[in-house]
Image (tube, rainbow, N blue to C red; front, side, top):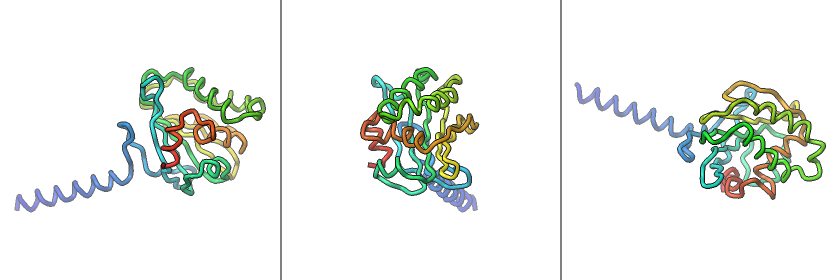
Length: 191
C-alpha cells in the first residue's frame, strides 16, 4: 500500500512539474511565462533573451504577440495587441540608466520623428522614475483599440502613453534595423 501511495505521489508530482515546465521557459536564470494576459486577451511568447552591458546581464526581455511572427517590420507596423516584458536581473540597473538606454534606443528607432515623440518619451521616463531593484518586472503593452501603450511595474499600472507612432518607435528600439542589441533582437524574433 505504501508503495502504491509513493508511486501515485511521484506520478502526480511529475505531471505537475510537466505542466509548470510548459507554462514558462528559463532564460538566463529567469522564468519567463509562455503567455501573458493583457486586457482580457492572451498574448503568446514570440521570443526572449538577455541584454548585457559590459559583460554583465542587466535584464531579460520577452516579446509577446497575438500573432507570432519573425518579421520585425511586420511586428513594428502591426496594429495588434503586443507587449514587451522586462525583468531586471542586476542591481546595477537604476532608473537613470534605464531611461538613458531608452533615450538612446528612441534616437536610433524614431529617426526624424524623435522631436515629435519627445514629450511622450519624457512621459515614459516619468513612469520609469521610481527606484529599480533586481527582479522588478516591467510590461510595456500596446492596445490597438485605444492606441495606447500601457506601462506597468510589478503588475501596477504606472500610466499610458498615446499614439501608434509612439508604439512603433518603442518596439523599434529592440526590433528596428538599428536595434540596441542585435543578438537580443534575434532572440525576440525567435531566431
